[in-house]
Image 1 (cartoon, helix red, strand yellow):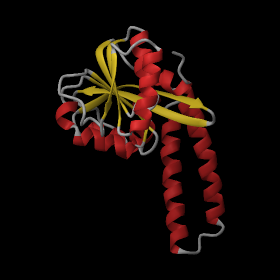
Image 2: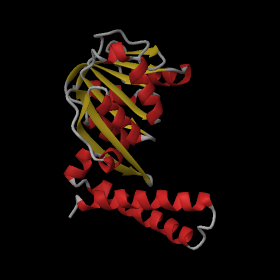
Image 3: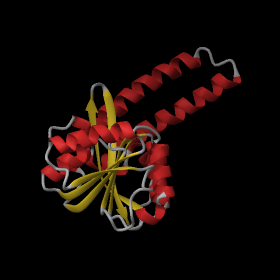
Length: 231
């Protein structure tokens, strides 16, 4: 199974495990790859919609893995029993949805060992949620694919680290690694936001424009703090 750059990076965050539960599995590619590669003994491909599950089931059958990967219709972790899996993957969905899945599935989440998360939005909120609810981020990665930046992380249960605000936004581990894709992202964001600031400074006559200007200036300040980690 050959994965996209994004999904390949997600899969690389997984350590050897007995059973992986892929939440929002879509095509089922990640659990197929992990089982084929010997990283996971078994897999549970889960999705809230029948369509993706059917696609996943067909791909699993085609790979000859129907005896090792099962599909389940499930809203988040609701279809997973406590202790049934040791690694959870939630990739390609909004950060708010990931937080809801972890919150509503708290009893099951407590029995899982590792959480591989790739939020498509609100990653600041995901990192903050993990820090506030007994998780510690142990690995992070970021890839650029088809013009889009994809940050991702692996979390486990543990004592959270202290974070500065900009580290929640851009990733403490990514900054410590001086990750080259993060640097590329920061420089792009700085350039775009400074262009907005320049335009607003010439037209900031309304309260809303002045608020927007202040927000943009704070965001550039966070980016500059993050970029200092690369010096």
